[in-house]
Length: 155
Image (cartoon, rainbow, N blue to C red; front, side):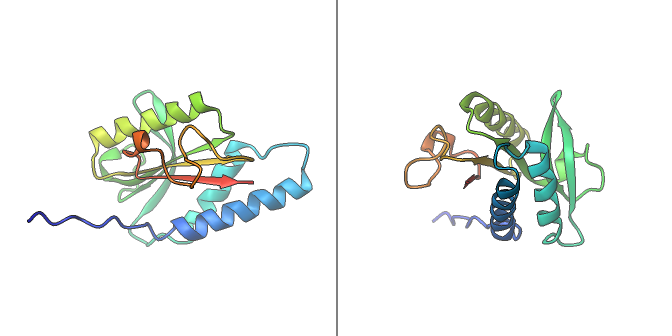
């Protein structure tokens, strides 16, 4: 009988998601006429993830991959261009523009094909559920199941 490997949730996921939701809500209270930018979300997420990483892992921003860049990568190497040592890859989207979300999903799928052990995440921050990737119960739509986890925050 083939033993099924249990999926592990990275140590940073829960606290970083909770923290980013609170942070975006806090910023929304101050600047309610403007959306918080994607780069600001990435910067805040950086700090929240760094707080939970072990000393043997490195967090990189804008790692190059196939003429594109991956928003955040967690790697076993200090060199952000060494994608073979990437453990987790995270793409952040502000707003539920389905074409842009799909572009990020496709990029992460290409990364997973090249490096199958990478856990890939998409974080979508918007005022409503991104219907193209998340069903009404909050689960990833099956066609997108190759992405390890789709994270989203409803503001």
